[in-house]
Length: 95
Image (tube, rainbow, N blue to C red):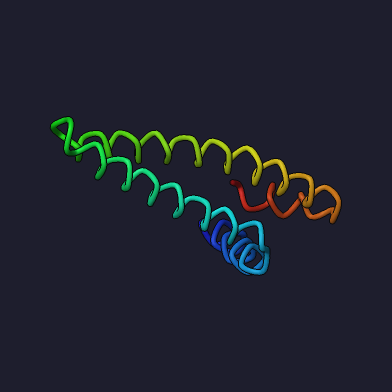
């Protein structure tokens, strides 16, 4: 039952690994996490619970990146499947 899903997952990993967009997205995320860490470190002198501030910023950042990635990657994937006329593979996989 999950073989079709795993086949799509494997194909997506092989294709997305070659794209520079994926690597840029990850690099931007790492830079923003580092920026949040620096802000939490600098604000730890003035306010208490700097870890709580860092944790809440990372949660917010995760939410925003997952939202943006979900929208952009899903729309691109559906468009590519329609152009390559392989949308039947998605329907056959039952995803």
